[in-house]
Amino acid sequence: MDHSHMGHSHMGHSGMDMGHEPMCNMNMLFTWDTTDLCIVFHWWHIHSTFTLLISLAGVAVLTAGYEGVREMSRQYEISSAEYVNKLPTDDNDGDQRSSLLWSGKGQQQQQKKVKMIKAALYAVQVFYSFFIMLLFMTYNGWVMLAVTVGAFIGYLGFGNSSATKSVNCH
View 1 (cartoon, rainbow, N blue to C red):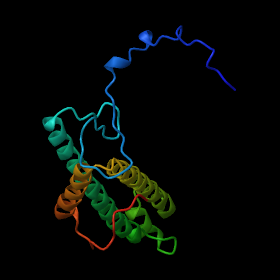
View 2 (cartoon, rainbow, N blue to C red):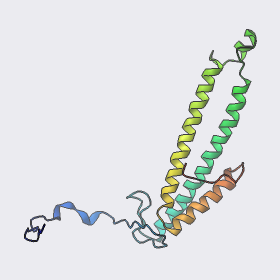
View 3 (tube, rainbow, N blue to C red):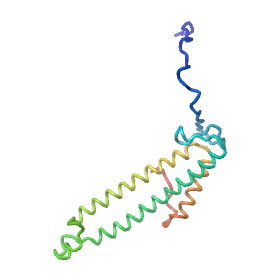
View 4 (tube, rainbow, N blue to C red):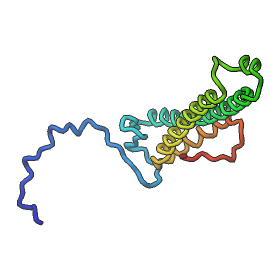
């Protein structure tokens, strides 16, 4: 269908205010170029060497924070397992049970509370790891290096367990 005879001159774009929006360069191939680089959000736009350096430091801190969240989750799991194991079961005599129970709640209620907190910590880890994946998917070498440096720093600061578990998006 030929539309060449239709005039589009009446479709002006003057009211769209397109000149004030920063253009984000979205690469789908690996690059070191930071021209018009936006990191995850439209407002996280690299304008200069200074904003690049601040952004790379921010990416490294965010990634190091992920290791902190992982370690906090591991420590909570350890302490909650010890706590739940110390709770008496229904097999114990009543005097011991009443002295150990917190606010009259039973072992099952405490286990549910622990499981809810563990699930919340897990959800934070999943969200955080997907966000880091999005940072990496800028396909920008500088951002990728910042993620790697952040993981290194985070593991040095917070990694008290095996390094064999790799970072993954889920």
